[in-house]
Amino acid sequence: MPHIVNSPRRLATALALILLPAGALAAMATSGQSEGPLRCEIRVTPQAGMVALQAIARTDAPISGSYRFHVESVGGAGGSNIDQSGAFDAAPGRAATLGSVSLGSNGAGYRATLDVTAGGNSVRCTQRIGGAI
Image 1 (tube, rainbow, N blue to C red):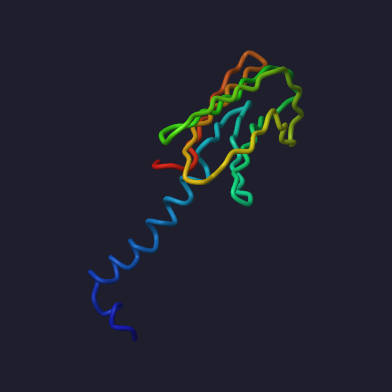
Image 2: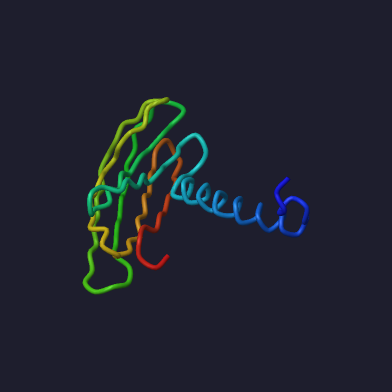
């Protein structure tokens, strides 16, 4: 039997070191999402030296609405502000891609905000990407 199992304190420390990063990863994977009959998500996908952001809407019933997708750089030199907006239609069980943007991922940090309004409901998703978060 490994020596670590004989010491409850070491075992607890080892479990904490294993479970803490897993919990943090789960929190990162679900941040940038909302819940309810109208939901939004900012999907982050790393690509060769870049990062792609997609503004996504999901719904439990067919809807029409509008969105605003805003991405701004935070910290570092230079800056960028990107705004996308418009009307959309969404069907249940299918992700509706509302907008997308590709950004440099060389240490830059970004803050993305997605506002979705449809069927009398409004939701907001936010996501921080890269940089010193």
